[in-house]
Image (cartoon, rainbow, N blue to C red; front, side, top):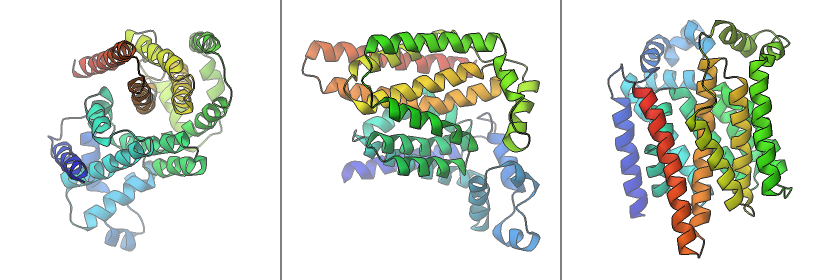
Amino acid sequence: MVNVFFLQFIVILLSIVIGFRPIDIGTDNASYFKIYSIVNTIPEYISKGEFGWISNTLESGFVWSISILKTLGFDFNSFISIMCFFSFNILLFSFRNIKINNAIIFLVFISTFIFVGSYLNVFRQAIASSFLMVSVSYVCVNKIKKAIICIFLGAFFHVSIVVIIPFILFAHILCRYNFSNNKVVILYFFSIVVAILCVKLTIINYIVSYLPTGGYSNKFTYYLSSSNYSSPILTFSFLLDSLLIMISFYIGKYNSSIRFCAYLYWFLIVIYILISNVGVVAERFYMLSSFIGLYLFLLTLEQVLNKTNANYTYMCVFVLSIIYALKTYLFTATFLS
C-alpha cells in the first residue's frame, strides 16, 4: 500500500512537470496549445453544434477530453497534466497484468527514449500507446477480446493504433506453433531483406495507389507525395532491435508472452521499413512500436531473473541493459541535436 502511494505521488509530480513545461519544449506542444484554444466547450458545442473546425481533423476522444476539461475551467497546462496522469495510470494497469513490480517498470519507462519521444512530443499517440500496452498485456494472459477493445479505445485518441490489430492476432496465432529458434532467425532476416527490397523498388507506392480514396487513405497518400525525407533503416539502433528480438526468442523459448511480444515487435519493424520513405509517418510508427519493445525487454528481463544460474543471469541482464541503454542514448542524442 505504501509503494502504491509513493508511485502515485511520483506519477502526479511527473504529470505536473510535463504539463507545466515551457510551451516550446516538445515537437507538437505548441500545436496542441493552438488546438486547445480552438476547441469549443460543451455549452458552445450545444449552441453551435460543433467543437470547431479543427475537430474534423482530430480523433473524437482527444477533442471530447479538451472540451470537457475546458468546460470545467482547466487551462492548457492543467489539461496536459491531467491527461498525463490518466495515461500513466493506464500504463500502470497494464503492468499489473504481466505481474512485474510496477515501480521497477515505471522507472525503466521514464528512463528510456520512449518516454522522451512520446510524452514530450507526440502526445496523442502516447495516450493511444498506453492503451496498446494494456492490449498487449491482455494478449499475454489470453484475453483477446479485451485486447481488441483496448485497441479501439486507444483509437479514440490516435487512430494509427488500429493498424496493429492484424499483427497482434497473427503474432498470437504464431505462438501456438513451436518453431525452432534457428528457423525464426532465418525468417527474421529474410523478412528484413524482402522489406528493404520493397522499399528500394518503391512497391509501397504501387500498393498505396490502390487504396480507397477518402479519410486516412488520403492523408497517407499526401504524406507519401509530400515527404521530403526518409527514415533511416540500416542503423546501429536497428541492429540493437534485432539483437533484442533474437535474444528474447532464445531466452523465452517456452514463454508464450515473450514470444508473442517478439513476433509483434518483429512485424512492426518490418512495417516501419516498408513505410520508411514517408519519414514523418515512419518515425511515429516506430515510436508506437517501441512500446512493444519495452514490454519485450521487461518480460525477457523477468525471465532471466528467474534463472538459477547466477553467472548466466548477470550476463543476460548486463547485455539486455546495455542494449536498451544504447537505444536510449542514440535516440536522445539524435533528438537533442
